[in-house]
Figure 1 (tube, rainbow, N blue to C red):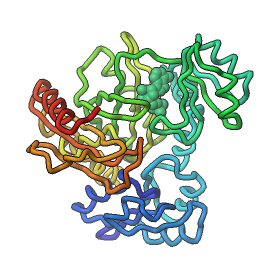
Figure 2: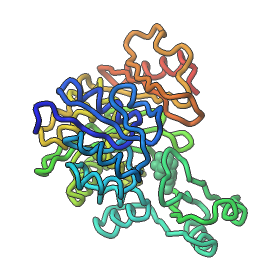
Figure 3: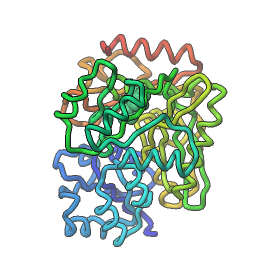
Figure 4: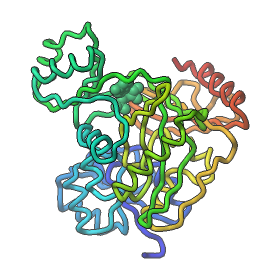
Length: 368
Ligand code: AMP
């Protein structure tokens, strides 16, 4: 390895930006590859702007990098495979293949790992939609198999849904219908695993969503009888995939059960609190795992942490607010409805103090 390895990131969003911000103190250098010229990682490093099918640009990118990783899982597998021929890449492109397809992902969890997932059905035609909706008792979520994130490509199905009309609007794609899980809460496990199979877990995260988009993460989630299983399931998935890097597994918790919803083969929004809240952030540990450097401690710095997402726009008071102990992360993206443009983190010594800080921050900034 060079003294100062250069790390390439396919995708130039806020995750790439934060990977670099936490990688610079370790002496790493960064190059980003993204089809859009205003990709926000470009604010903190060299950005190559080209399509993912541009092999000349991919080769130029790969040649500059000692290691390559991803900012998001929807990077075309062909681009990742091409880069893998020219340099080291983590996690392996075959992981993207599974993570890009909700059906393949669910099959991995249920059929290959025997892990609990809610009922699901492949839907490629109107008749399959009718069958699946009936089997789900008219209570489900229809999702595109590919390219769905932050609630995009997702339709709530109830007895009131006009299926004919819906299908005429969306016809043409491949879908999965998931039976609705009436959960008590949503949790995520963030695990770092290196090529030797060593792993480290962050505290269990409790996540709140609105319209399919993560709004708040509270850490640690109050322990329940299911909590140990959450870590066990995440490790099984990571081991099965021979995973290298940070992997996030999102789950629904009901009274007696945990159902796996999906995985993200990357650092995750529900782990952003770790920048201030943990001894080693998820971003640093992703890089450590990929580069074969011993994993850093995932212990919390103070007992509790919370992250609030800024969606669509940064509240006008922003970081000029009088709240003294709020950490701001503004990604430098253009405002757009439903777009994650920044987040804030607060840390606390106990659950009550954390709750108060989250309430104060939300109130102060007029969050809905
Ligand atoms: P996803 O894109 O699959 O993570 O879905 C976004 C959010 O929609 C989840 O975090 C849940 O809040 C909700 N959701 C998705 N699928 C289901 C389901 N099968 N049952 C209940 N809620 C769901």
